[in-house]
Structure formats: C-alpha cells, structure tokens
Image (cartoon, rainbow, N blue to C red; front, side):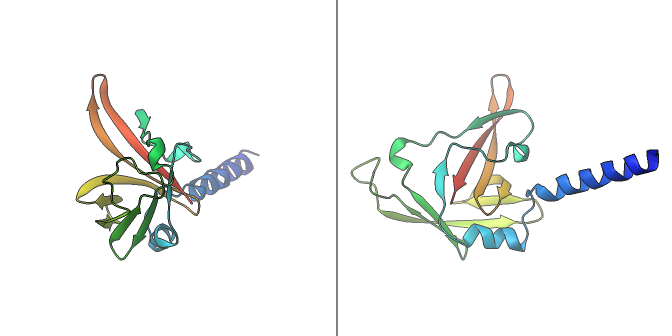
Length: 143
C-alpha cells in the first residue's frame, strides 16, 4: 500500500514540477517574441516569485497602454496614446540578451532574473537592498 502512495505522490510532484515554467528554453524564447507584452499588476503565477520580500513594480497609469515587443535582441517600447511626458518618444529601442544558463535577461545592460515566460505572462525581477534585508522588485507583463 505504501508503494502505491509513494508512486502517486511522486507522479503528483512530477506533474507540479512540469507546470512551473521558470526555465528559459527555446519555446520560452519563442513565447517572448511571439507578440507584444503590456504592463500588468496581476500575477497569474506567484509560484515563480523569488523567496523573500516581493514588491511588484507599479507602472504609472500613463504606461498602461505601452507595449513591449521583443525580437532579434531588440526590445521596442511603444508608448501608446497616453504619454507620461510631452517630450516622450512614441517608440524607443533597447538591446536585450538572454542567458539560458543563468536564467537572466539583460535589458539595456541592466540584469534581471527571468522568473517566467509563458503563453500569457512574462515576469522578471531584480534584487535590491532594503532596510529589512533583500527585496525583490518584480515586473509583470501580459499578452
């Protein structure tokens, strides 16, 4: 009887591990570049968050219609119709690279840990020192 219990427990663990999309692989790269991303404050998968104090990056209301398009190591930020500044460019390009070994994404030479790339959510974060220890600022985007 114990043998069946451990077998079922192992299968459930295996299925749960497969559902977590934290690694950057070829399909994650395809998902990243498949279509534009928009900023979000809704985290559909908190299981991919770093352990510790998590702070979600609060996008400004003027950034809610911005789109982020990844292609050929170039990130294009389209600022939409609502601009935060009258001098804000409609479109700006940034370099980005992904390191599959360290699971990082560097955007304009700023390193972030890539937490998730799924069909519906992109999430990355950076560690910053805080008063009570390390805090993680998490950036979330959706299609």
